[in-house]
Length: 144
Image (cartoon, helix red, strand yellow):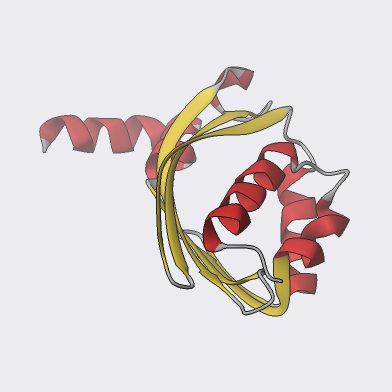
């Protein structure tokens, strides 16, 4: 018997909170082979490409955890809001960054994620944290 959507979503959230460079090989347990992953910076097709992406992404991360908040499930679709707490030595002087976002997930019949789309402010995560570009973006935001 397949897990309910709520159980699948909770298992997915728990996995994401333990995800680091040492466990990216576990991605096929949570994603289908032909998964489509989209965020404001990337579009990745296939679990092998996603594994390479996460391996590279987590390579220099000191810590990354998610505080999951609101959850909504309807059939095979799920939405979850979150706050990412990230420490990366090259961003924000190595101090913790908090970025709010939302994930839209589509589950396959076998309970794994077939489509994962993240929505978040890429400027808050990355661009505003870069020395020259960050100053320019903050200046533009203040003027708007």
